Length: 188
Image 1: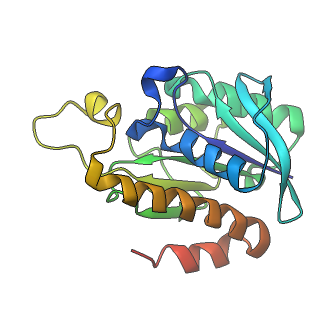
Image 2: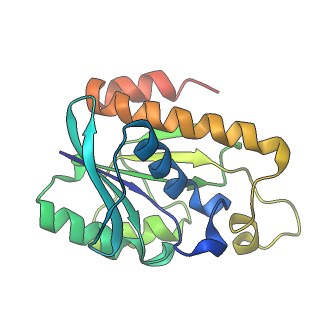
Image 3: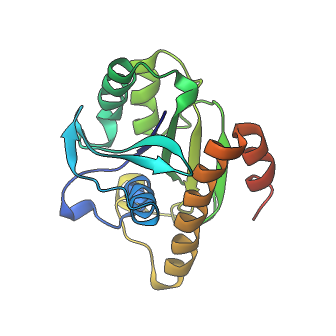
C-alpha cells in the first residue's frame, strides 16, 4: 500500500493557488482513478482505492501547510507503512511552472510543509514529487507569491504538470522510484 499526500491549505481562499498544487494533484489522481475523497481522518481528507492494481490512500492534509507533518506522522503510524511507501507532492518555486522533479529524499529547501514533515518523521528520506510553480517576481513577498493564482498563460502548463504528476505516481507504483526518476527527471 502507498499513501500519496498532496500538500496544500484547506478553505476556498487557497483553492487553485500555487501553494495548493499538491491538493490539485490529489484531485487529478482522484478523478483519473475514480477514487472518492470521502473520508475525514488523521487531520486530512482521504480517499481509498487502487491505481493499476496497487492499493493507495490519497490524502489532502487539513492542518494547513506549516503543520503538514502532524497528518503525515499520524498516517504513517496508523497504517504502519514504511517511508518508502509514502509519496509527498508539493509546490517548488525553484522549478519553472509545470516542471517536475522526483526525489527519494532531500532537504526542505525552505518549504515549510516539508520542514514540518521532516520534523515529525525525524528524517529527510521519503519520496517526493516537486511541481514547479516558478520563482517569485522581484519585489514580491514569498508568501504573497505562493498564495497567488496562476496567470492565464500558465494555466495550460499547470494542467499538463498535474496530468504528468498523475502519470508519475502510476509509474512509481508500477515501475519503481529509480525507473520513474530516470524517465521523468530528464523531461523539461
